[in-house]
Length: 437
Ligand SMILES: *Cc1c(COP(=O)(O)O)cnc(C)c1O
Image (cartoon, rainbow, N blue to C red; front, side, top):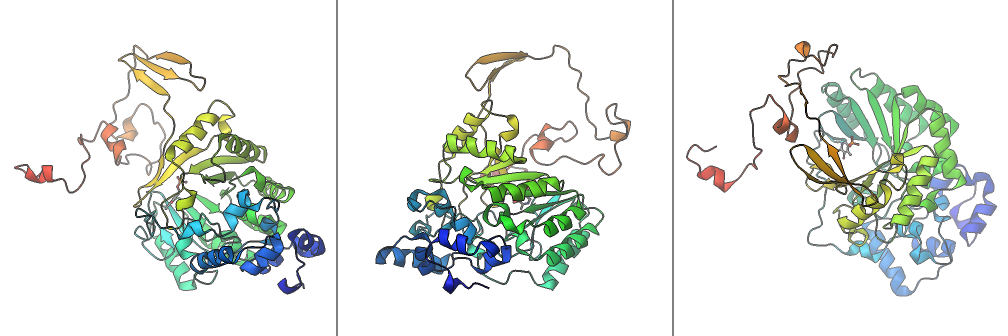
C-alpha cells in the first residue's frame, strides 16, 4: 500500500504512479489532502508565507479535505481562477463574518425533534446518517459541523430516529443526508436502508450525495446492487460546474441510472464558480445528457464563512431567464432561497404573467414577445367542502388522502376555511383592538 509520504510531487504523477489504486475509493479517502504542505506539493504552487498562514488560519476553523481525484481536476496553470480549486481549497474569505450571517442559517437545529432528524415539512424529513464527507466543500451550509465527530452516528441515536419515524405515520419521504450517506460502508448503508424499508408508511427514500462528483469510484457494482434493493429510491447529487464531468463521474452516474435510480442535481450558485448563464447552461445540458434532472439551484445561504461566495439574488434570476425557453424544459432547475430561520425552500423565478383583466391574461415569453390568453367564458369550478366521498371529481380517492385540511396560503385559497387573513403572532395593531383578535 502506498502511503501519502511516498506520493510523488505532482498530482499528475501521483495519478500515473498509483494507477492500480487510483480507482479504489478507500485509497482515495485514505490519501485525501488535509494539510497545506501536501496541497502545495501536489498542485506545484509555492505559497508565500502570508498565503500559507492565511490558509492555515482558515483550516483551523473550517478543516480541509480533498480527494486526490477531485484535486486532479484543478487546472494547475491557473489554479486561483479554477472552479474546482475554489470549491475545495480554503480561502481567507471564509474568515469574513458579516453582521447578518447566521450560525445555523436554516434553523435545522430548531426543527429537530431528536438528534439526527430535521422535521420541517408535513410529509418528509431530513435524516443525517453520516457525519463525514469525501471532500469538504468550502461552500458547505453545515460548515459549522464539518470534521466534528466520527463518521457514523451512535447506535442509540439511530434507534431514536427510527422510533420517531415509526411514530409519525405522516412521514412518507425520508431524505438521507449528512455528511455524505455514501461515505458509510456498504454494510452500514444496507442496514440503515433495510431498517427504514421495514417501516410501512415510508413510500420513498432519497439520498443526497456529492460522491459522484468528488469520489465517483465509490459508486461500485456492489453499492449499486445494495441501493436497488430498496426502490423506490432516488438520488440527488451536487454538480456545480461542467468541469466536474469526467469519464469517471459519467460512469458513476450511468451505473446509478442503469440501476433504475432516478437522478437529480442540486447546485449552489457561487460567485466566481458558476455565476454565469453560459456556464450554467452548459452544466444543466451536461446533466440531462447523463440522465440527471436539474432539481434545485440554491441561492448561497447565510451560513458563517460563505460571504465571499454569495451573489445577489438577481444573478440567479438572470440565469433562470437564460434557461427557460432557451433550452429543454427538463434542464431547468427551480431556483430557491432556503429561508433563514427555517422557512424552507422558497422558489424565486422570473415573472411571465405581465398583467390580467377579468377575462384575459397578458403573458410574455422568453423572447420578449407579449401574448394574451383568453380565459374561459364559462367555467364551473367545483366548490370544495372537503367531502371527497361525495365529490364529482374524486370517485376513488383513498380514505387517508381524502378530507385533509389545507394549511397556510393554501387555506386562504380554499372554499371551506373561513380565514381571510394570516397574521404575524405579535402585531401591536391587533392587540389594540377591543376584542383582542
Ligand atoms: C430540502 C429539505 C427537504 C426536502 O425538500 P424537497 O423540496 O421535498 O426536496 C426536507 N426537509 C428539509 C429540512 C429540507 O431542508
